[in-house]
Each structure stands twice: as C-alpha cells, then as structure tokens.
Image 1 (cartoon, rainbow over the protein chains, first blue to last red):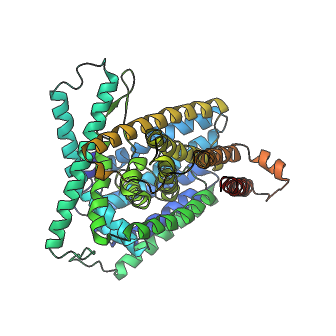
Image 2 (image 1 turned 90 degrees about the horizontal axis):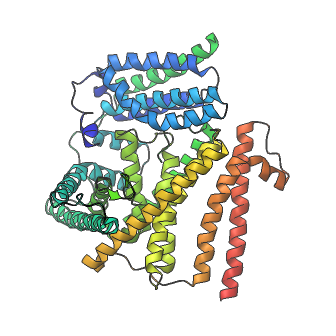
Image 3 (image 1 turned 180 degrees about the horizontal axis):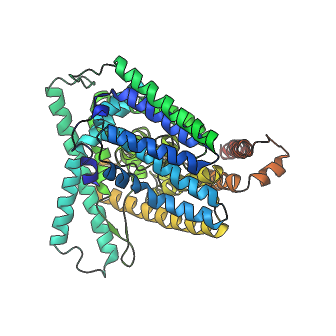
Length: 242
Length: 281
C-alpha cells in the first residue's frame, strides 16, 4: 500500500505536471460526470474515452502500462458486482459498470500522478472544502509513513517474540493484537503532542504557509476548457455514430 | 466498502454529495472549536494511526484475519465530530491516492463511513458508555458503525439499479454481519487495553441514559437501516403502501420512493421517540 503511494511521484515531469491543480480538477470532474451520465451504447463511448485517456497519458508522459495496471485496482470490486449483475440477467449493465469504473479510475490516476498531494489538496480548498479538513488530510499523508513504519516494526518484533507460533490461544492473541494497537495509539498521540509543540516553536498559528503560491494562468484555463470540450464532444460524437 | 465511480446513478451520487459535503463541513467546524490549532496535528496523526492500524492483523478463524476500520474507536477517544473529520480525510486520501473509492462517489462514501458510520458507532457509547453496560456499548458501537455503513452502501448501489439476486444479497449481509461483529470485538479489545494503560485517553460520556430510551434509539438506527435497504430493493412495495406514483422516469421514481420511505420512517421514529420520552419523564 505504501509503495503504491510513493511510486506516483517517481517519474519525469510532463506538460500536465505544469498545469494548476484547479484546472486539472475541473477537467477531471467534467470527465467523470460525462462518463457517469452516459447511458446508452456505452461500449462505443467507452472505446472513444479509452482512446482519449490513452492519448492524454502519452501526452502527459505518464507511463501508459503503469496507468493501466494502477487503474485495475478497482477491478476486484467491480468484478463482484458485474458478475452479480450478469447472473441476474443484466449483462449490459454489468459491462457498463466495469467500463465506467475502470475509465473513471484511469482518469483519476492521470490527475493524481501529475499533481503533488499538497497542490491537489490546495486545489480542493479553492473548490470550497474546509481548510481544517484539508490540513488534517495533509498531516495524515505526512505521518502515514512514520506511523506505518512504527506499526511494521511492532509487528516484526511481535513475530520475533513468537506471536504467530501458537495458533491455539486465539483469545490471547486477539488481546495481544488489541494491546499492540493500544500502544500504537498512545505513541501516535504522544507524537502528535510533540509535533504540535515543535510547530508552535516554529511559529505555527493555525495556518500552513507555502512559498510557491499557485497561479491560475491563461494556459490553465485553456487546458480546463479544452479538456472538458473534448470529453463532451467525444461522447456526443460516439453516441451520434452508433 | 468503498464505492468506486461508475456504480452510482447520477441522481444518487449528486444527492449524496449534496448531503455529505455540508455535513462534513459542519463536523469540521465543530471539531475545530475548543482546542483550535492543537487539534490539527492530533487529528492528522490519529488518521495516520488508523491507516497504519490496518497493518496489524487480528486472528479470526482458520487462516483468516481482520483489521480495524476505526470509526467507533475514534469516536470514543476523540469525540464524534473529530472522528468524522479524521475519517473524511482518510476517505479523501484513499480516493485520491489509492483510487479506493470514487471522486463523484466521495459524497456517498463520506456519508456511509465518516458521517453515519461514526454517529452510529458513537450512539451506544453515548447512551450506555458510563454505566455497567459499558463493555457492551463499545462492542455494539463498533458493530453498528460497520453494519450501518455497509447496509447504506448496499442500498445506494441497489438504488442505482445494480441488481442482486436475493440469495447474493443475503450472503453479503451475512458477510457484513461477521465483519461488524469483528469490528466490535477489535474496538473493545483496543479500548480496554488503552484504558488499562492510561485512562485519560478514553472519553467518558456525559451521563447514562435509561435502558429503554437507548434501546429505542438503537432500534431506530437498525430499523432505518433495514428500511433503507427495503426501500431500495422493493420501491414498488412502498409505492403501493403510500399509493403514490412519483414520476414516469424509473430512476426518479426509485429515488423518490426511497426518499419518501426514509421520511416516513423518520417521522415514525420521531413520534415514537417523543412518546417514549413523555412516558419515561
């Protein structure tokens, strides 16, 4: 899970990386709505959208194979419901479910892979999300790796002490796992306290400052408009053709 | 269960987004009150804790293991408003970075897990957390939070037109029930260990409520969960009961009857609650 989070940023910069997060988010929302509201003849629309996304990946220098692989994380969930739908005689919807969820996932990945997390969260802030919530999200993202490393170390230490050797005492092991989580909780709590004091010492007044203020340039507006128009136009064309 | 994009019908996700986003904003404002900026690192690190907690497995049965979801645990330690904020931030990160749950469906996932999941998890604790039913209250909170979110997610999918055979529906409800009981047991184990370690971590609810009133409240939650599920599987049934035909468009009719059913349930529960409160006073 943690590796999946890190690999997003390890690649060369492309033209999409230079666009403002807000313009990418706006384009993403339009694209998702276009996919979500498409109703009939979905396979044809899906083919057009897939070609569009693949072209966007190549243009943005996002490795296509990796993007396709990453978007496949949605497939286990989708597969279950698609099979259930198919079994109850709604094959068309089953196919539409699989295609829609996969394409949406691919589009989200395209934006996430080309936008650093803080910029993405700032973009949400200008869309009206509460700043408090976004700062909490930023902290989670920052300390996720720290706490997860601690959890891993604890799990390793526990198995070195033979925690998995005897499976007979399920209740005891359950209790032990509960105790381990409680210790992790207490350590996280303490760490939060230390972090807060360190932040106060560095002049934190309830607001995070950033040196690179995001600027919404003409190119950003042009990108958002063009991407939205292409998405809407492609769907209309695909539906006209069928 | 994180719903990805592409599963929910446009009216369903639009409605849920419109409901969930203000609810989360309200929770953010409430959580911010009081300790102000000290809350930000605390909630952030506790969110990281919930993420990391999923790496510690709890042995369940033969070869299988479960992990903590966390809504009820956070509600009992940080309070419900803060727990909602933390869960909302976690869901947003999961949707963005891990593509676990959709962007348009974020409102649905927020409502299921961060708003209603947390509130359902806090309800038994609020009612009985101070008295001798404390252990049971914690257990019930964990179970109820998972059950409520799962049933809501299922109902939203059904409302959107995903068809499920009754046997599959029953099977998935059974799976949800097992994971709900597991969450209750894990929440209880962690909170007991925490209290033994340092009692200050776990919030004490203000005052105990009477057993009857609490039972009515929990029954109302269960009843409305079942009601939502019933409304979304069989909109025709409610339509017949109420004698309304909302519209010709099938999705509008489905969504409309679902909402009407919900409103009827709400009114019924409110009336019943008033009645019960008057009797107990």
